Length: 421
Image (cartoon, rainbow, N blue to C red; front, side):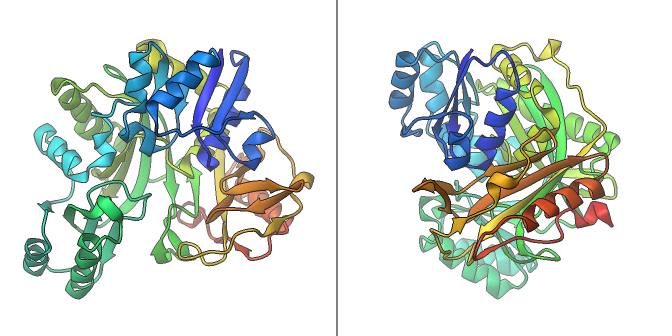
């Protein structure tokens, strides 16, 4: 198969790495890619949010299968445009992608499906939102309704903080994503990520993970796009995963189908688990980043077969073959992230590191300049390792980090602390 992956971050580097392990891949193109991806696959400079541009490229390059990495092209309807052109694509329709693109839409789906989630209110003006917060009290969670690159969620410890977050959102701090706001009950418990593939009819669990959103060790400081992750997540036991499937995910899929928008692609359910009971925090309509990196490290070549089966509606015949292992990824970020950060630092030492099925550095925000790798994003590298235990995987990943010369780069040294403790 000739395969196109849309995206250019660490998630897409790990997807490309896994796809290339499979002999069914004859040619791989990634658009736009990054410096790390360019070392293993062709890269193409495309506007991946323009379905017409992508469809033309697919036709000209004889692409057989498209894997959509980020949420923005899905929300823009790129998968629909490709399907209209007769192209096999992995990723939900624009209508189904509302499960991530609109938090209010997801809440309405959960209400209709009787799926357990946080109590909430949906608001289009600041005064009503503030009145709701004042009535409910704090802590409370304020969310921009639309896509905000993983940063449109504020956990307010006080009513005053919540009011300030509401002002920021309606004031344009998150662009159009904050034109509407969802305010939720603050849920107690431990959060974990559950990933399933869907083909419009069937659902296939493919793994669990737990990520670290806060920038500082001990889960302190502001939220980020993710500072690291590990898989599997011990808190998501088989029994709890089965409850999540039966009480949350399958009812959601049934409701989506009943509304004429059957879901096909990967569905990432963020769950809050308390006393063995899962509740939905949010849905994402793509692989998490950096959770994808640990999942791909553990799945390897079979990831392509599973995504292909989902796209063709064959999940009822598919099976996941897990090794009894663990994987961890640690994000190396640029100084200042998640605020204003420095760009252009030259990164040395990457060429001395292993690139195997148990140790990989996935590039997230890098560029190649004059034969050197430079930092071009906030999250720059995803240092990833597998091991027979999480301790072994973590030791391996941090040993690789210690061999990287990245001036101004930093990472958390406690990724996986819940499971390691």
